[in-house]
Length: 262
Image 1 (spheres, rainbow, N blue to C red):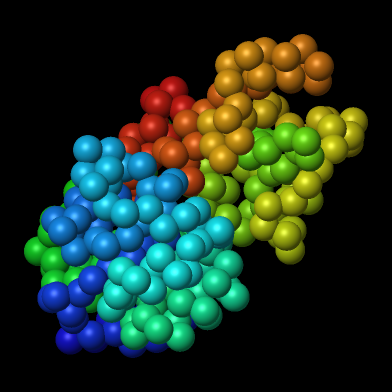
Image 2 (cartoon, one colour; image 1 turned 90 degrees about the vertical axis):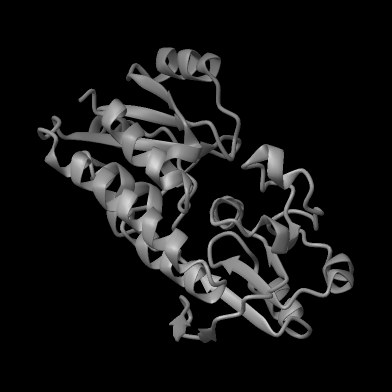
């Protein structure tokens, strides 16, 4: 059997793979598939499941990777993501890691192909199939719920400068599952994570603001101050639930139901 990644590279099954993963959400899925013993390296942002990843060596961040440390770990496989990891870094690693698996989920149901890819390459097909069945069931429950009132929201991921997400992102497509859309100018915006200012024209379009708990650590205090400043409802949301694909996507589907008040 062969499996194809996001760049079209074909991979074959490797039961004895030594894996470095530079994607926090995928690290969690690999652990859930029973592959923790084959993970020889992970980033400092790979924090789930905490009781397991603490025993896996850190190799830097998602973008500031320690090349020499990874080389010494002698991995056979590297798992990366188009959004999370820098292309020049991945190219350097590819010079001595035989197999580089590139991922790029941009919609909730892309998690199915992701699970099958990882399960297939790393010989965990039964675990992947079981996970996919759970995802399909949870997704069906979400779609069967009564439609929520449509809302236009601005999803903030950073301040100083303020940054948001465009329509071509996993986050935007997650929110769309409950009828929440971004302002019109962000729907087809070329930059996926653009800076913005609180212009009156923008505020006039939105029903409210969502402050993500990551990557910037927005808190309820931030939400309260911003709501007073802009005169719009501001809500703190769990960034992991809305931006992490892989295993956490199951919880993310349930979280969407809670956000919509269903």
